[in-house]
Length: 479
Image (tube, rainbow, N blue to C red; front, side, top):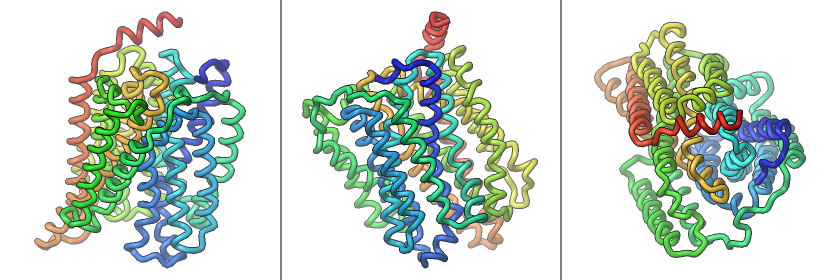
């Protein structure tokens, strides 16, 4: 437990932790803008270039659960510092890479380090801030970093690639990683894991990690290999079989990697289901809207990053202050449902964006609503996922919710991108122009994202217990 330090030191530690998380989040998107430059420099083919992204996604998604549990067993601070070290060294290797193999392997190690950092950072924050009012504010900061980091990555990637070279999208992590390591080592008191006397559930860890890696691989390559191809079907079936094996192992071992009793908590189950739907909607918005701006409206990479700024600013205003006040006043359920519904309206507006759309009338309104919705919803969603969890299982719960976001986002994006591609192909087959056909496909994807966000809003409104009075009483007690 790390919450015994003074208040000023806690908030300093939060800023440093969020800087480390931001570095991880940025690297999920900062590479996208630089892919053409990387392909030209290292002579990637279109088929092999996808591994610059997928190698990171594969290890990141596969090791989230294991990383969270290792934090519970061996100490969240220790694992966070290990993850930052791995990520920073891998970033150096990526920046210096002069071959395809070196870059892809370094990206895989980046994903491993990123998984550990993401899995334990939320636990560290929850343990630093145990009082409801402070925790709500801290989670707002964390939520903004997670929700807004992706679009910031596009802007930063465009700037670095245009002004310097693609190598700097990785090398920029070096001073940040070193600073985060040094400051976290000073600010976070050392502590042993809550269950350091238990042995790691090796069979459970192996089965769930391989299952997640197979699932992520099948999902991110579904469009290229074909969703009904033998490769995709076999991998998904193998992932399901390993998941069933994992559940059987966890029900029998004395010290399970994932205690199944965790899923008896309604808030944990609901928050993770809602998180899957929400991530599917947000990934669709981010990636499909970037494609709409570039391929339909003809924006350059830097212009795409600037187009996301209004959403980021709105998200920052709510995540960094107003969202916490809403949670303290209304509890978790109402702000979460409202934020998701507002985001669904923003996606619905994008679903009607025309092929000759303008920024002010066809892009900005949806961006503002999505920034508003994300700013309101992300904080209560994380609080719902972690609020009833025992401190000894906080790393696990953090890994579970991060895995839900990862899998939901990957699966949702793959599904909606496939729908968009199929719709665009059918429109081109009947004589539509390329831009109009692409736009028609993107509209279907945005509509699907709106449906996901609406369903998430309904589930959170119906299934989450109202806790406003409890939160308000706790806050009053502190005052």
